[in-house]
Length: 400
Image (cartoon, rainbow, N blue to C red; front, side, top):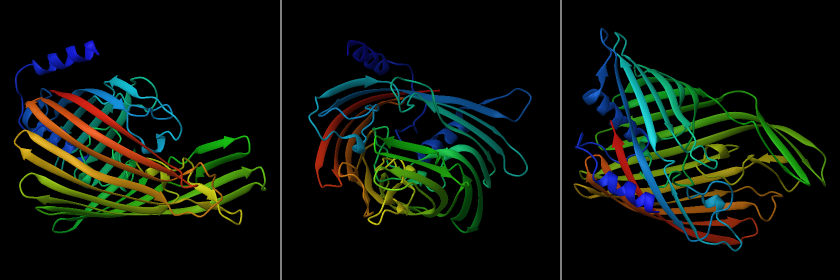
């Protein structure tokens, strides 16, 4: 704790201001801020028109949790990891959310070439380890290839939580994509992609084993509208997954399932500095696309012993408020639930809820301090409920 306080003091005393546009934004808005920084502060490779930028931030998080979360990952507030039994308080300190970016851009006659590499230290297991979150090439505004946000996600309507994971019912995945994009009207773009399905999964126990394997890439398309004050998106997802399962009391089952997903979202600018963010998602066999999970496999037995895809519905409602020039708040609620009627064990989760509210202050141009309160609740198939809460204190210092 003393080392953490010393680091905070050092950050507060750190060097000169370098830019007025930096915020704690996430998703597409954070990437847009990097693009603006590229225009203003990039260096040029001698003898070429190619410009590059190395940028990022150091982040220190102090976490106090009323009841220690279950599982290996305790540095982000996963509602699915809320304990149902007795649990002690938990206090943690870490730098895993720190982020580093490298951007390179070369102008061309057809719109330009941009490369973006991004990593943090949050590899979803114990310890701070390098975690490659994005590595993508963009050719003009019409083609993106590499690891980046899924086309099924609305990165423009992503709320700026201090918690690393964010709302449980949101769609959030970064994976390999090949995405094409074409304008079809004023403010309208149609995008379609082939994406890595990441469906190779297996679970099991003494009386049950199951596995999943993708049969083809996921197919995703979305229609996006960008207006002066309104951003809106509707997206669709198609996937094909073969499930195999063995239950002690039943014969081995193997079935190919055609999964689907539908998502609608919007970000509405209110006044000069406020935004209302909303998203609704529904689908079958698309559990891995949600920000938190009710099932790692995505398939369950129904009452007749047939293997069926898990049906999920998720949503969030968030509001971003600018109180004054250097003070902002992001607050909202989110939920994820299953509608499947099946032979799921009584201890399996059927609903999780996530609530967060923060206050962030830009102490200096490059230094942000924030506090966030989080609350979550998990409900099992047998209607048993458990809740938990957390306080997070964050210091973020931008590096350029």
